[in-house]
Image: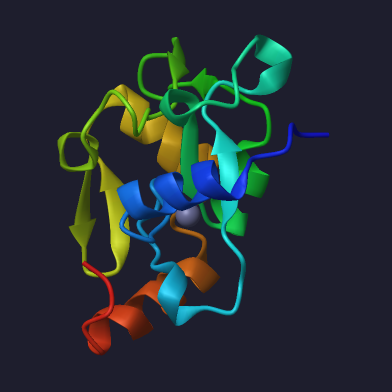
Length: 136
Ligand SMILES: [Zn+2]
């Protein structure tokens, strides 16, 4: 159960995010799915319901991340935190190859893996958006 996020705070998060998922960059405007207020550090780990700990996330990313903070990087076998949209820059950690999101760093690798950025259905959806200029 999550703490209530006020309409004003929610609006600030959405605006800052440019109305797109801050993890997979899926734009909210092209979907009927309601994007979610994601706690970067989950409340169970002490994360607060404040602007600096909230991110806009699509339901796919939010559900896959859950309350996790990171995972084991398959290349280094080290416990590695997820990409943090508040303190890190997306372009430093990911790049697009066609419709696939390719990780560039350990944080990128665990994020792509656990948040399932490149599930076939999501690649297909992203390819459709790229084709009509709605994803970048
Ligand atoms: Zn997403």
